[in-house]
Amino acid sequence: MTKSVYNEKGILSFFGLKEVPFNLTPNVALYYGLPTHEEALVLLTSALEKGDGFIKITGEVGTGKTMVLRKFITQLPDNYELVYLPNPILNPGELKISIARELAIDVDNCTNLSLSDDINHRLLELNSLGKKVVLVIDEAQSIPNDTLEALRLLGNLETEHQKMIHIVLFGQPELDAKLSLAIFRQLRQRITFSCKLAPLDLAQTSAYLNYRLHAAGYRGADLFLKKQAKMIYKYTKGIPRLINVVASKCLMLAYAQESYQITTVQVKLAIADTEQNVMVEHNGQRLVTVILIIAIMAMLALAYVLLFMESV
Image (cartoon, rainbow, N blue to C red; front, side):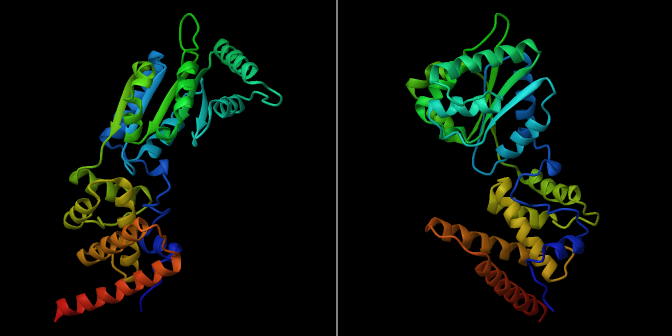
């Protein structure tokens, strides 16, 4: 009898997993040291040690920027004070308020000028205590133009010996396009370190698939063999987020069919379902969970038909 493909506890138990290996939410515990990810982390560490003001990390959607960001944050030494802004769609005043709150500054009844002074005084105070302040901004391509200029001015704050705040920008390639504009030439010149995250190659895709499984607790033989990994790589073009989507569906299908190895048919079905979802999203629609379950069950029925035909 076909099992429910959405029985998460059943999937974990069936494969001997402690946690979901291909969740779309970045999980630092499952971090796999891809070359460009490691390069970005080394660059970030080096840039902070050298006291540089602006650092930039870019990458296409799904290449692992958020994973690198979270890994970087978890590795920050105790002498660093973190200011993290996940949503940078702020005007200059809102930016200052957000930074002030992260620095434990009372923002009630503050004017724009007094807030700037308060931030400056707080940075000096932290500096005197041996603390280095790191402002990390995610989705930096969304920062409004006037707010980018406010960031540049904030990055100018320094003592006689070092910058009082280090600013790390994580963004999509659109950030590079924005910074290439003439109005941002001063800010562009202040970015002394930058790194671009790249997709995985075929070998990395295969290693990534099986590493994530073992990191999540799996102890059996490799579920994804070279042929299946190559199919996933060809479709996803090495984008980690897409790899996770397809691999997660493969696990669902394998569990439903009580299979301890991912088959070619299962990969094809997972890719077909993913492609269908992408097409629907491009039309401005979202598939609800009920429709997904029906689609997966239909694919399971097709899989059994294909397997039966192959055996005849």
